Length: 447
Image 1: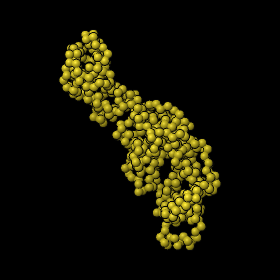
Image 2 (image 1 turned 90 degrees about the vertical axis):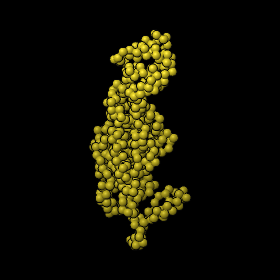
Image 3 (image 1 turned 30 degrees about the vertical axis):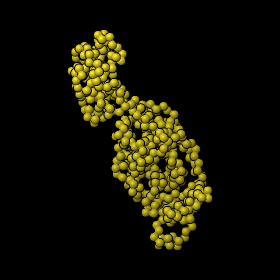
Image 4 (image 1 turned 180 degrees about the vertical axis):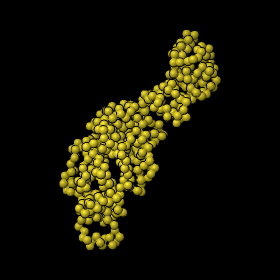
C-alpha cells in the first residue's frame, strides 16, 4: 500500500513553528516514500474555528512549499460521523452518559484525593431505561462515551519504539457532545480510516489518545495506521508553544521578521535529529536527507537567533532569480543580479537590501572626515566604464600617491562613498555608485 500521511490542524489560531514542524516532517516522510500528503482541516470546534485561520494555514504551507495532494474538511463530513456513531451505538460500544460537568469534576477530584487515577467509573452503564427517561425528562441531554476493552493496547512507534497501555487504566473517552457534535477522538479516526492514512505522525501529547484510538479503529473496521509521536517543540526558554498566544507564528516570522521559507524549513527539518543544521536551498535536498529514525526523543528547542543566523547563511547563497520577486515587493524592481551579488554577503534579511540600494542609487550624506586626502583620491578616480577591477586599480594609485595603506587608506574612502563604516566589499559597490556620484561624495557633497 502506498504511504499516505496527513497534517490535520484546527483552524483556531495562527500556525506556530511547532505545528509547521509536524507538517514538514509529514510532508518529507511522504515525499521520501513517494506517497501522498493530505491537508485536513479539523474544524468541528465551530466556536473557535475561523475562516481567516483556515486561509492562514493554507498560506503558511504554500509559502513553505508544502503542497498537498489531497484536501479535506471535517465540517463537510458530519453525515459520515453520524453513520459511524449510529453503528457504534447499535453495537453497544457507544453509550449515553448524563453527568454534568460539575458532577464529573467532583468525581475526578474525589479519585485524585484518594491517590487513584481519574478514570470514569462507568456509572452510566448501570442506568436503567427508566433512569435514562427520568434524566431526560429533567432536561438532561446525554454525551456519549466509547466503551474501551480492558485488554492491553500495544504498538511499535517509529520514534518511541514499543509502547504499551493497559486498557483498564484508560478512561472511556467522550466521542459525542451533549449537542450531538462529534469530538476529535472520533472524527480523526473516521477520517484516517476513510481516507486510507497509513502513517500518523504527530506530537507526543497524543500518545494516550493513540491508545484509545487504536481500539476505535478496530471497532469501526478501519486499518490501524503506523504511529510516530514526535517530542513537542519548545521555545528557547523551554516553554511550550501556543496557537492562541501566537507563539512564534509562521506569519510573524514571514511578515515581521523577514525569514526565508528555506531557512525555517532547514532548521525545523533537523531540530531534534542527529543531523547537523545546515542551510539548504530546496526541499528536495531535505527530502534526500530525511529519515524519521534520526528523530530523537529529547525535547528540541527553537531558538529564533539560530533561525536568523541560518537565514543569513541562506541569503548569502541564494541566486538573484530566487529573490527577484521579494526585491520587487520592496520597491526594488530595478535591482538586478549585479546589485544582489554585491550586497547579499552582508544581509541577514532581504529587506536590508533597501539600505544598500539607497547607498548605491540615492543621495547619501558622506562622512568627509579628511577633505585633503579625499580630494587627492578624487583626482585619481579612473574614467568609466567601471568594473570589479576598478576599486583595486584606484586604491593602488591612491596608495602610491599618498603613502596610506590599510585602515588609514580604506576607511575614509568607505565613509565618504557610503556614509558608513562597514558594508559590502567596495569593489562590488563602486561600479554601482558610479563615477559622478563618487566624485561628489568625495568632495563632501550629498549625492
